[in-house]
Amino acid sequence: MIQRTRRELIREGLAAMALASVPGCASLPSAPRRLLWRNWAGDHECLPVARVAPRDEDELVAFLRGTRGEVRPVGSGHSFTPIAATEGTLVSLDRMHGVSAVDAKDRMAEIWAGTRLHALGAALGRHDQLLTVQPDIDDQALAGALATSTHGTGPRFGSMSAYVDALTLVTPSGERVVCDRDRDSEVFHAARCSVGALGITSQVRMRNTAPMNVIERTWTAPVEDVLAQAETLAAEHMHMEFMPMPRSGLSLVMTTDPTDMPEVDLHEDPTSVEQLRAAWHAVGGDPEIYRAVVWEALGEGASDFRTGPAFLVRAHARYTRFREMEYTVPAAAGVACVREILDAIDRAELPLVFPIEVRYVREDDIWLSMFEGRAGCTISIHQFADAGPHAAFDLIEPILKRYEGRPHWGKMHTQTAAELRERYPRWDDFQRVRQALDPQGRMLNPWLERTLVTESAG
Ligand SMILES: Cc1cc2nc3c(=O)[nH]c(=O)nc-3n(C[C@H](O)[C@H](O)[C@H](O)COP(=O)(O)OP(=O)(O)OC[C@H]3O[C@@H](n4cnc5c(N)ncnc54)[C@H](O)[C@@H]3O)c2cc1C
Image: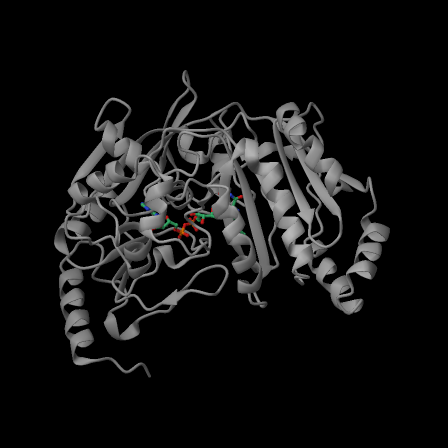
């Protein structure tokens, strides 16, 4: 039984009364049946006073107009931080999904913001369209992915936010703002990567591409060879990433390119990362023997491939829960930064065997995007969810910061608003728009207060 203070009870009572008066919300769970919310990695949770899931934009507008207090929109909870958590009202757009209109000539589609990425492959395919880029999983809600400038890989491709042509934002006071490069362009530049701090995105027009079949090739090679060729490989392939395996001296390389092969073969071994951990433990954490075991098992040149429609091949199964920190450093500095990180892990004799993921993303002009004004190399450090991440993250984060890294908005980091402001030339512009749209700070939770607002001059 959860004990609540008198103040909390009053707050819940008022919230319940306000909600009951909003169309579509009266039937939602009332305050005494508060449900725990938890993110995918399982390390952040909250007990929202209420959860609402509007059926359409009118209900979303009515909810925001008819209520007060803290509000956080949530997608699929795949961020590694409490960015979406709230003790106020959690708003899910799960019922606002699907493709609502298409522009065949310019290959664009209007998509409801709650649509999960895995639903878009078939839905867009029916209109001869495909998302131009995708992350390495497809569980996210479209608006959730856009709010953090979620990306795939390839120096010719921006993050998903770079393919937003227009969007509809419902502000905290319940006004609808339709923005694009010409209409409310300041809102547009802020809202394509909004961290959910400007209001609730209800609909997005995405610039898409033609559906294609692709072949994904994966192979292993000595990490020094991969570092030497990384930029060339990235330029030669449609998508390319590499995954150095710490303590082993090997790296995985993954490229994806269009193919005429009609076969669909999506096999993958979701236990492969667990096998690295098992090997590390089996040899008692002896780095020499671990290295020998990994080389014996994966060896130089071990290779594999998958084929099929791009929207299926780009998405991977992630059965092993992990925590992740990711920073984007300037693209040209990526290789040097990765080399320094691997050296630091070896020198510190860190028991970190989870592969690091290195990707390339084109620059954009989205105010809070990690790629604003500079092409980026993204470096992701993972640790198993049941192992403490801090030894690794504390060692590596200072290196990423020294390379002028910008942390991914959906992944772990320790930076405050004051530090981040130094990294984003358009930070104050974003704050100006945020304050105009949300003067009462309804959209802020404690994590956003610390990361986005406190100590910022805006
Ligand atoms: C296994 C795994 C793999 C991942 N792979 C990648 C990857 O390849 N590339 C990459 O860049 N990232 C990746 N991520 C990170 C992930 O894409 C981001 O954290 C993304 O924001 C999660 O989307 P979501 O729908 O779960 O949003 P949530 O985590 O639920 O929310 C994220 C943000 O979106 C906001 N939001 C949600 N809905 C709305 C809305 N309607 N209007 C306004 N704001 C809204 C929330 O308030 C919050 O600020 C991965 C994460 C996991 C767990």
